[in-house]
Image 1 (cartoon, rainbow, N blue to C red):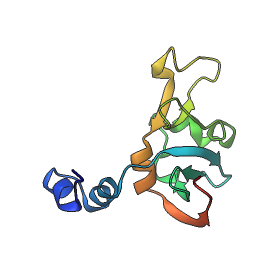
Image 2: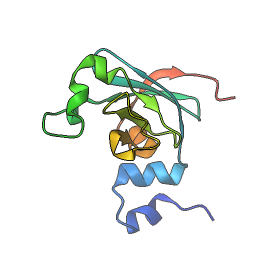
Image 3: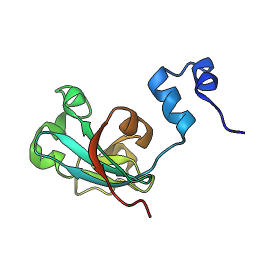
Image 4: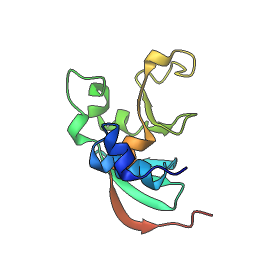
Length: 122
């Protein structure tokens, strides 16, 4: 049975996340870094969205290494379709999980804005 927005709100979700889950979860199929510390994200529903990473790229956080554009550009999709960066690119984060910083597809979708572009989801 499909769950509606009211169901997710009753579970403590905020409205944007409740609306997202009620509409069905999306998967990221491609990620590309931009020089202004945003990411262009392609989702499996055909949407292209822009995620501004500037709000969480701060000194003293796990994201601090990615304040340098060369490090920020090392973004990739991991095996769970999460946006990810390796803190040390010489270490395999599939083996040493503490080397990876990632963002869930759900939060990436909710926190991003449409780019105006739509690609063929087929």
